[in-house]
Image (cartoon, rainbow, N blue to C red; front, top):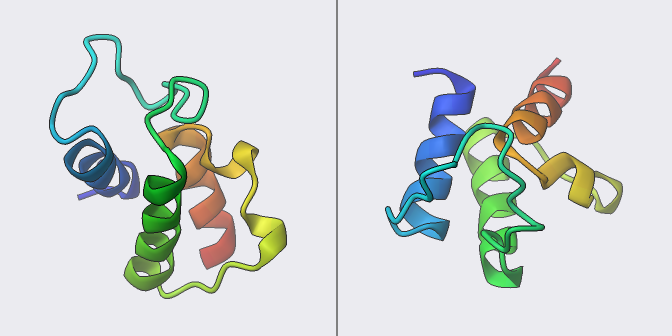
Length: 81
């Protein structure tokens, strides 16, 4: 399973509770469209840290890095490099 697939699965199962909008894509704005509320945002941060064994610092936790599956996957890939 690809990184994007893993992130998509987590977000659709946890944040969307499997009620996926018809226009949902890897570029769907998770913050603007309120897919990630504050609790879901914290859960996603914890998931990323635990699942990919990376430590996020305050500067990493920006709307840009978490705005979509595409942006989140790019961010995780940069942290893993």
